[in-house]
Amino acid sequence: MKLYIAKRLLLLLPLLTGITLITFLLTKALPGDPVYGLVGERSSPEIIEKIRKEMGADKGIIRQYAGYVSLLAGGELGRSYYTNRKVSEDILDKFPNTLRLAIGAMILSVPAGIALGLLSALRKDSVTDRLISGVTISFLSVPVFWSGLILMLIASLWLRLVPPSGTGDIRYMILPCVTLALPSLATVARVTRAGVLGVYRMPYVRTARAKGLTKARITALHITRNALIPVITIIGLDFAGYLNGAVLTETIFGWDGIGRFTMEGIMKRDYPVIMGCIITGTTVFVLVNIIMDIAYHVVDPRVRLHAKDR
Image (cartoon, rainbow, N blue to C red):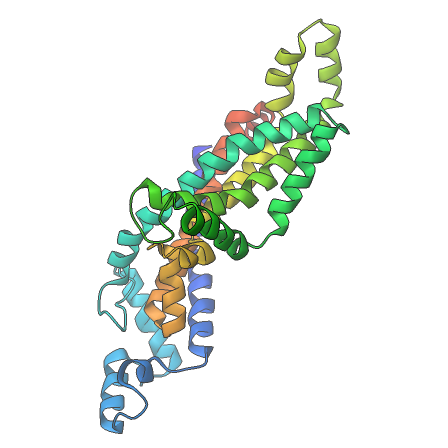
């Protein structure tokens, strides 16, 4: 397992190199010019040319990319065109806010999703199963921006229970966390249901019933645990997506996180911010996938056996 993790970490370097190159070329292809955003279109050509030199935009695309790679090699992500702050410092300031939302959404969605999926599977084709399926499909079908606005309208403007937007204590986290949690809850519930139904027909479950084990013990030890592998995958992918910044949710609720920071960078053509956020997101995604692989080994002994065979 240690060797596997080491190999995955080594593969991170060529992956980041490829992502960096593609992102750099795409950002340069974006319409608009950050220089005009800084000084205005009516500024004199001398001022515009001076700003271009300070930003390095007067150089060729290859020299610009080489300069950025050398910057990354020194452990820096560059400076924002608009604030002149280090992008790495801004990301470190905003990442904890996004992490709070991600953890909050997972706390709301994972236990509830697994419980609903398990209940739906154990009562297959019943009224309860159909009701849970209808609710989860609704959660998956509703766009995040629409559900967020509806929650804001009801909980903040009508009932005045929580603040509508902003970054702060747990009261400010409730609406964005619920908004993020709804589609994740639905996905976890449906994947759990499918996994449980698939495991329920396995021979070892019939053997456990033949031994006289109680239904609760069979469900806990033989069904739920073996059905968790696809659920872990969904949880990991959702969590990685949240850590990369839930752009719409953070923008709607004015939450000062990575997603909103990325959106502001795109709107302003702030290339160092865009590059820094994407590189950070790629790294986070790979690390979360490694953690998921470790979780597979813990949950399913067959994965450990397969790893030894290799």
